[in-house]
Image (tube, rainbow over all chains, first blue to last red; front, side):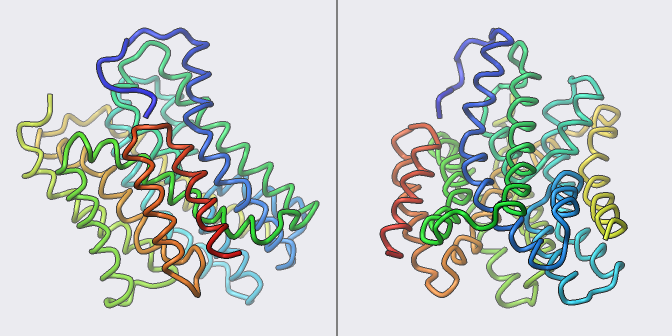
Length: 246
Length: 96
């Protein structure tokens, strides 16, 4: 991490924007190849270039968009697609609860904009920035990071729909690890500071693995597996983190 | 198609938005705050595993090795981007 606790809490607007851009860099790098792949798949599934891009701009949730265009290609019904999307994306409700609890003091219109563009990745980067919400101009940090991630997704989708699969497959396959590596890179500094965070993460991994592989939460039900594993593992924090909060 | 896009957009946006409107009205008990504060770590865990095994679906070990490289790099307290680039490079070499 570039930042550690105890670093200065005053930052100018310009610094906040610059940092928001820099901390979001792994997200843009991860999104672009996936967005291109989505754009290619969506147009192959019969969506127009406009529909492909509009879905990225309005839905802005990668996994559910892949699932959605796949279901369209297989002739699924409107309600089936909408319900499956709800199930897959409901985890954002939990993530949003956690982030909005930290950003309580932000103006409502900023919170509305951040929450509606919240993804697994923008959430992860936000939560890894210790004390960010207490800094001056931190609103600009979050807005920059969230909006650049959003535009990289939308523009990447458009690019894939118009130009097609331009990345060599060896490269785009390798880039499939980018967002996982980012999650790991964001998690480790916290774990080094406090082993209990690592324990919570590992228990969540195991629960998720068991739910998906042994309890039938596969495919579009993976959304529920993530929600259940996250809620169950984080509830250990109630006991484990006692006395840790400020 | 437009109806499907709007339907998907609504069921995605509403759960994301609700917390923005309810959180400042609720004062949480400390135990509930501890739960909410632990969510990022649990969420990251569930987002990493077992999903990382499907980076190269027919060879789950490739994702694991890429993840191990990202983890090793992250231990040096460098910017996350180095973990990302290191992992991409590792998977690239393993799939050549």
